[in-house]
Length: 252
Image (cartoon, rainbow, N blue to C red; front, side, top):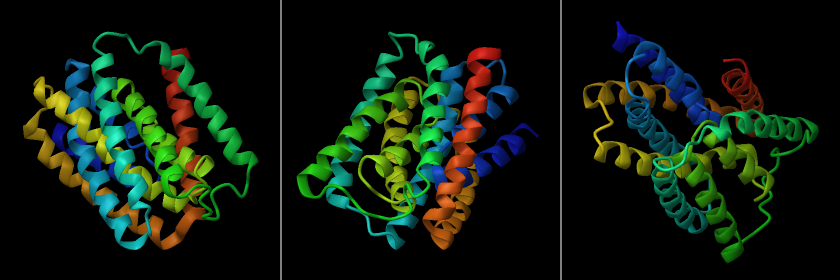
């Protein structure tokens, strides 16, 4: 029964992750609820062992249908990988608890800005090209990669927001780019968790299959309905993240 419940959570997480990120909002609390006595690092390792497959498959699906700036994204993904490793190492030395109260406030600012700019992310109009685009994407990668390794919640949504706001992408292109970036940061964290024995491999394969199934469905919906649909889902997921992280930070 435990495996069935976390598999359903993994499938729904993959569905949400494929569209706008934020799947960890679903799977991580489910793992903590179902396995309350398990060390947090192990639960995070299980989450990464499932989510990396969903994001990787979503990145592949998007790459087939969306024209992506690979010359900028490849170095950015490498920067995200390095940043995530650094963040995962930093969390062993510094308590990330101070971010719990800051996160819902940052997310609230992201949501308010997105709602105020009604046309934000509807049109694909990249602001940079060549080396400038590569540098901007790499900055996004290393900063959010470090955040993902160090703390994590909302990383996919932050990737999308920065690709829209800073680089000028529409929500569909931003979501596609976010999947590649998130795959790199998830891989770095997974390697670290695996090296320290914090992955339950007997659960990993089943949860990965469920996550991929949800991811494929979410990707199809995003590609079929376009940037407007992704924007709407982004607003819903960020709103849910605000409620969840706000509860954890101030009421729990």
